[in-house]
Length: 303
Image (tube, rainbow, N blue to C red; front, side, top):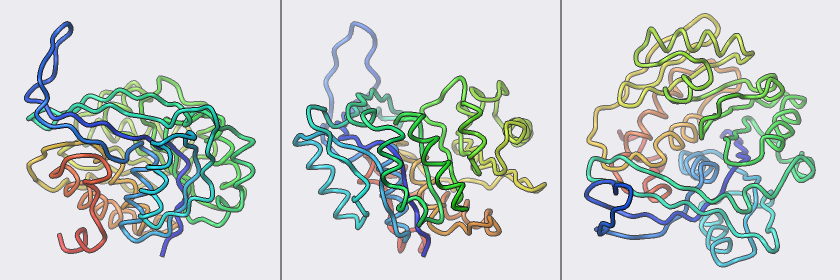
């Protein structure tokens, strides 16, 4: 069983179902409203845990009702919460998600407590990081905290996975030096490399650029086309499963969490792990919501 530690965001998601996206200056009626657990970090941790990994989390919530709600939700998933701080006088992160009938989404995030911790707090959780097979992080928490976490992991021989989302125009060299695997989608890959990714050929060029930046393993997800990987001279586009998507929220998070649950630290089963991640995300997009849509190990293995 892999030990996966996620350094990342915790949000309470407010979801709205609409027929179509609202235009500027327009008011429309929603068809459905509900709240659920979210945040890219929490989503990835839930996905890893449900897929069978022993999962720990490092992050923060506010001392408020949404914070207590999120802690309860994560505890029920069997995730080790000893690395989560409760920040006084700070709000728990929140996301406001609108999904239309085509399955597309628009998301607005308030970071709150997700930006209330840094390198000092990370250093206090070094034991969790060192006792892991993989450490995963995204860009919904402070970069300085992620750099510190990855440095601690690297020094201990623990593999690091960076999900560069939401997209950043520039990723610090300091962070890339301690990143073993990077997992952008096609838009994020273009933001980082300047190469427009739409197929296997363009993904290969973008991956080469990512290697130049110092990352050993590049995985670029290309929506319904699948996931392209390039590592140690081997590259391939692993096709996605063809399903009807109703909500793409958390699809990428599910892919990363599920993949990390079975990936070997030497990356020797990389294609197999990507296929497992593809299976998991294909189930996620057929359901509504972020964490409510994330599948369990038995579901993925049965697909």
